[in-house]
Length: 380
Image (cartoon, rainbow, N blue to C red; front, top):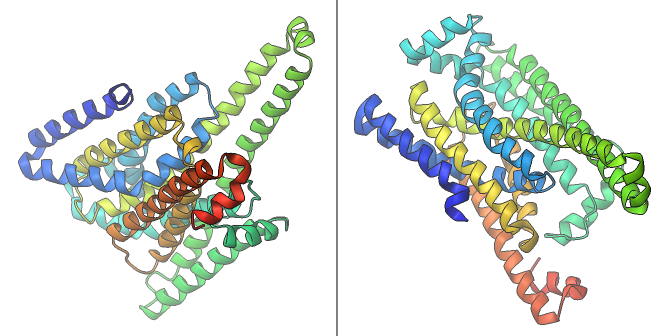
């Protein structure tokens, strides 16, 4: 099972490291290895959240996620995305941008760094909306019950998450604008850029997340109707329409997954420049890391890990919230990638051990009927 799920990741790792040696010797090998580890540590929460969405898809869409999805993740986000950012910010053509990335690496790094505020604002807002919608939803299973119960009550207020996200964006833009003016005003227009990029992130979340949620709800309604009148559905051909609807639902969830992955990859791409400004090494290292995130996602789904360790999804969403805040803070201040990675790993680790304690408490209490007791005894 392990080899079947991670086989491609192992193969890509071997090929990537060999390619690095041919490209730049043992130094390049070391840089690619470090970048791979950094990407995996930064994206573990991504895998957990992805698994929560992917488990709703059938085997066909899981394969699409692992094939087309990985091409988008590796080549699209880790290789093409930084070049596109440079092309837009420096008003260059795609070929000129690629040439700059390969021949003038320092200038290329400078242009990507200049574009960081808009990248951080877009990704930060998208991830912040995921976190806010999660914590404001009333769930049967609560991890930090003392916090999640009052937040679930607050969540009954319409559009609360959007209002909070917009307030956070406004504060970030104003703060950044003030900081720019204090430093000679050379980047004063970046406050407006931050605001526009943040709003774009919010709109992207609402469109993609809204469509995937809509089709998912429609699919559930259709399945309920089929269950109630199975024989009639078979005669009138309704199962065919249900398959089509499932395809739409899965497609929009796949689209949502790709935008989610893109938002997660922003910190990895930007953080990679602290290690190297060589676009080839960056693509190799981050690409290997992205493969493991994909494989880990599928592994979590097929092993039913999220069902067995029920707080993992909570921990991953809290890690998303932390990452969103970190991304917005990096608009003005530099935060080391190790801190970003450790925060995510710590929250997921904590939620995992809380899940283990809950499972033990449930076993001792004699089943799911004593969930409240189990939550109290597991220390959450």
